[in-house]
Length: 592
Image 1 (cartoon, rainbow, N blue to C red):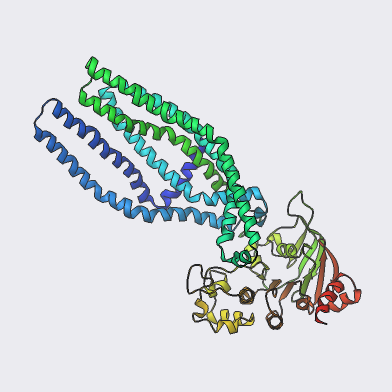
Image 2: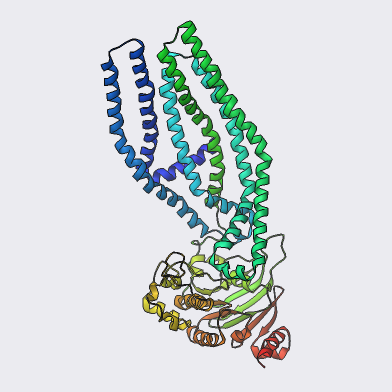
């Protein structure tokens, strides 16, 4: 219980800090709502029935009803503003407050977290349930206030009118508490089991509606058939999981709904009231009617309180995922460490090894390499040789599992990762285009540069001719997902925009991971010329399967099976007549 309460307090502090006025009125609204109902449905109806039963003057009943209507009319004004205005503004703020924390954490967690399916499942569940957790928490707050208000007001009425009737309600309360808790635990277990299956269904859904896959699905309809089959299999598995608990749910629902509710309250209690009023004459008929009518409200109030902890317990299980995600301490802390000395410097790898998981084979094995400032290094090799992994280690997206990497003579682990990574201008092979302006897609930072610098970077990347055709120039919206005037650039055009990011950053170290994979030969030639001028005095790493891009490098490193198999200039490696020469001859042969 202590842990469950801590989790709810976590959300309360978040919500109260974000919208204190809204949260206070939110609690008051639950009390006000049930208070007005008690005034109308208990005191008002009881007084009118009492007047009729004992032949009181009509004006008394009429005056009492008038007072109640006046009170109701006065409180409707702030209530309408709260429901139709304030709530629509406050809830998005509450969602944003939690999501901003989660987005910030997501940008800090180690890249290795994405390689762990269990962690990634929890990560996805935490993000998916963030808004739902707040909604459930607010609903529970409302339940609690309304339940306590009902119990307090109606409880006093029962004690003053017929205290024995409370025993029937208490019996229903205890039993509902027990069965609701069992049912909520069951629902949560099912939710955990179906979560990976729902992720698969959502993935298939994205494939069918995202533009990225539209062409291939039409050219290869069998792929769509296979995915549809996987969707159906996941759907069947979800149905199967639900079937496993269907009987148990039905039994629990029947016991909780009928035996605990209808039988005790609508059967036993009404018999008791009729006996008290008609046989023993210990209760007025007007009080008997109100007591019976109010049992439903009192039962709901008791049910609210009875279900409060099981619901809080269920919500707590989701909040656990959120808090665990927010509490995760990255091994590589982005903003901690020493500042990086000014200027470029040698980048040295000393016996570097790396494996993604302890039970996996090493991806890189005993790599030793010294790169001088301004040196242009080409890293080549077949798929799976470890080229991209090596680059990730250089940028400290991962830490080596063996050996070390130094820059300015210091282990890069000593530097602030944020400052250290700022020294790199990178074009990833799997670069992404964002649904933002062209300017933002180039700058990729909160601090914008001058428009002249952005345009210069685009021109050096070979995008100048296409840029001149854009009516909105740097304000052009990339992709049409959010703006019908947006532009969907071709693969080669998008790659040029991605390359312009590295030119704009003006970093000491440039990393080009397959920079010309989507470019035609002329564009590739122009890019190589642009790189020669842009990379003067900079350390450059090229990763490419197209050896025409790497032949002019100062040094070529050929990786094979995670090791450096060959090293030298283009001419030296051709003279060795080894793996590099074999790769070169295969590619060069296409042009002979």
